[in-house]
Amino acid sequence: MGLLEGKTALVFGLANKNSIAWGVTQAFHREGATLGVSYAGEILKRRVDPLAESVGCDFVEECDVSKDEDIAAVVEKAAERFGKIDILVHSIGFANRDELKGPFYNTSREGFHLAMDISVYSFVALARAFQPLMNPGGAMLTMTYHGSTKVIPNYNVMGVAKAALEASTRYLASDLGPQGVRVNAISAGPIRTLAAAGVGGFKSLYKLFAEMSPMRENVTIEDVANTAVFLGSNLSARTTGEVLYVDSGYSIMGVPNVSEK
Ligand code: NAD
Ligand code: 0WE
Image 1 (cartoon, rainbow, N blue to C red):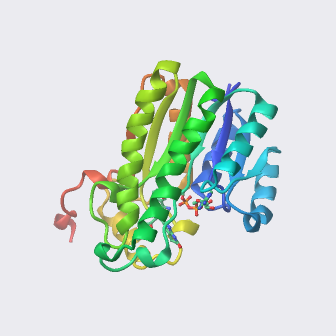
Image 2 (cartoon, rainbow, N blue to C red):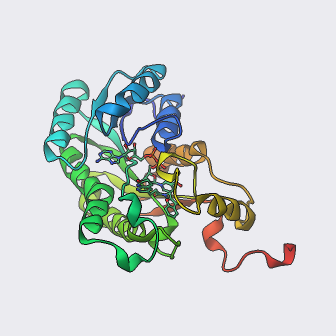
């Protein structure tokens, strides 16, 4: 029997087959969950529709999380279709490309606001909007990165946004705990997704990761997805407000393994 049998999950942030959200969707399907997916805009529909179809998911909704009316519309449709839901996955982040290079102090006011709105506030807004639909024993999940607590060159305003996202996870966990809903974050190592494409220095960062992490291996969307299964399932019944690292141990290292060189 699947670990998510009898549970309904909504996954936000599907863009293409490389998306962490797609890994999560596939793993949830494998574990027997009933699924709904959401994507950002019209242009992604062409990619997302066939992916959803391949896992027998016919709840596929467009939702730009910067628009309150879009969020309200998905809530209404989800209530109509599923009644209650058990798992909500937030796998969304965005900053303007020009904020992800050069000194952090060059972050514009507008760029700061945008990154915080799409990457942080959207999780708070989704949590509020879906809270009335959540079954007790339910779980909410978001995706974060080590740049929240340590400086990763060029990650800049996204690092600040991830710090706020992790703090939001704790506040939401405190709010929703009494109704039996858990809220956790997964901190994934670097993965080649759309959100990593064209990021200056990503390639060397990716390579360094495999060399420096205790397990000497990069992280896949399947690795992240299996942890999402755990955090969405009853196996993690008493874990909430946590940031769980899926990073081959990278973040525990103080210096690289110089003895190997
Ligand atoms: P991705 O590009 O596949 O996913 C990012 C998603 O955010 C896309 O589907 C995009 O459409 C969506 N999005 C952007 N603006 C939106 C909006 N206004 N409304 C709705 N959706 C919007 O890349 P990914 O790597 O799968 O990213 C998913 C999450 O994982 C992000 O929060 C990212 O920060 C986080 N993360 C990624 C990595 C990595 O190395 N790839 C590592 C750790 C954490
Ligand atoms: O969270 C992320 C992705 C963040 C991201 C990336 C982009 C690139 C394209 C947010 N917005 C945009 N906007 C774009 O226009 N990661 C953890 C992956 C990532 O992004 C980096 C990294 C790593 C790792 C950016 C700079 C340095 C390292």
